[in-house]
Amino acid sequence: MENTLKPRSTSGGRTKFIVGGLLIVAAIVYLIVSSTKASAQYFLTVQELNAKGSNGRDVRVSGAIIGDSIQYDSKTLTLRFTVANVTGDNKEIEKEGGLAAVLHAAVLDTSRPRMQVVYVGPKPDLMRDEAQAIMTGQLGSDGVFHATELLLKCPTKYQDAVPGQVSTDNSSQAGNGSAKP
Image (cartoon, rainbow, N blue to C red):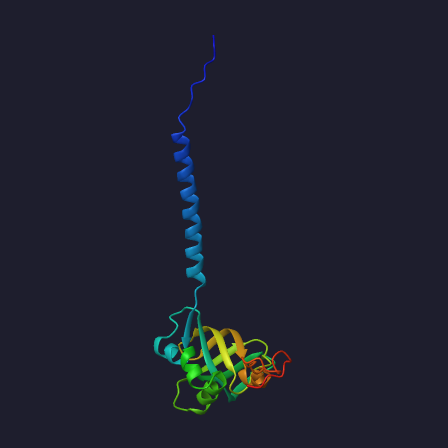
């Protein structure tokens, strides 16, 4: 008796391969979308956060630190301070003279919205008047922002360190590092 092999139809194998591939792609897309939603944080100004609240979600807020309000308890590592509203629009910041000028104006303008902040952790070295605080956390029912992460930027610290631009003409100054603005 001869053993005869019948050729198998390849269309069934291709269909299974395509369906399996689509399931893998769908699973990857689902994982990306679900992890993005879970870790998404809203970036708000002090004024927006005061108006909307954080609704139990972690939010990221930026503001100018009011130097006179800084209180630090080294025993409990509790840092308390107040921030003033700073615009989040980069074009407006540039129009008003840069970040240092905007932070300075925010601290001096007592009519701007302000917010109390509590952060537990070591006091950052850049914690000073007119520094930009970028905080992650939640707004409590008492109106105090409870920060779990605190990042600081101090543009005045680096203001004098920014080099001047090299002029576009081919003068003898180009390339020697001593360009005049």
